[in-house]
Image (cartoon, rainbow, N blue to C red; front, side, top):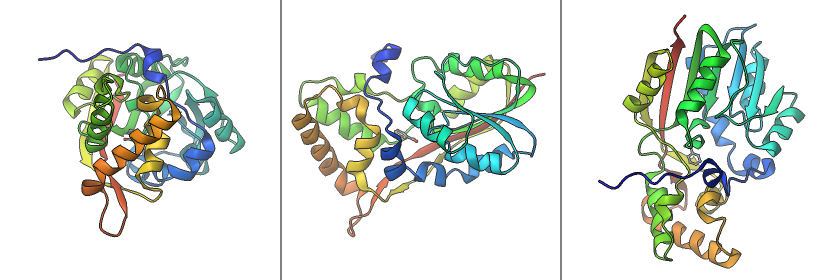
Length: 263
Ligand code: BEZ
C-alpha cells in the first residue's frame, strides 16, 4: 500500500484564501444547513461556548441570540473581521493550537475540522484543554467519502498536467471509527458519531464552489491554466453532479459527533 503523502502545515494552508464577501455569496448554505448539529449541541442560555472555525460568525451570532456567551476563533483574518463586524467576540487563532484553559461548557464546530489536516490530534487536544471537566465537544465536518467525485476530478485534471494532485488534497475526512479513537485518546467519551450522506445543492454552481474551496489545488497555477483546470473539472463532473435542468449538487458526506470530556 502507498503511504499517505504528508504535507507540512504551511503547504496545507497554501492557497486557502477566505475573502468573506466570496464566502457570503457562495457558501451561505454552510451555516443554513447546520440546524442538526446545533440541535445536537442543545445550547442552554448562559453557557459559555467556543465556536471553533467560526468563519464569518453567522452561526456564532445565532447561538448568541439563543442566550449563549460565545467566543469564535478562526484562522482566516478576513472572516474574523466579518464576524467581529457582526458583533461576535471573534479572534484569529490556529485551530491546531488553541490557547484556552478549562473555561468553556462546550466547544462547537461546523464545517471546519476537516481543514485541520496537519495534526488533527493537536486540534482535539486544544479542545480538551479549552473545556471544563464534563464539557462537551459537538461538531460536524466532512467525513470519509466527502466530496469524493469533486476530489477525483481535481486530482485527475492536475495529474494530466504532470502535477501530483493527490499530494495537494488539503482536507481530512475521517471515518467514525478513526475519529472516535482520536477523541477517546484525548479523554473524551463519545456519545454519538455517525456518517451522514448529505447531497448539497449548490445555488451558485460548481465553478463558484471550486473558486471558493479548491484554492489549495489551484493556487500555484498561472491564471489561464487555473481557469482551464476549473473548466475541465466542471465538465468532468457535469454528468454525475449536474441535473438536466442545470442544477448542481455536491457529494457531501458529514461526520457528526457529540463527546463529553471525562471529569
Ligand atoms: C465541507 O464542508 O465538507 C467542505 C467544504 C469545502 C471543501 C471541502 C469540504
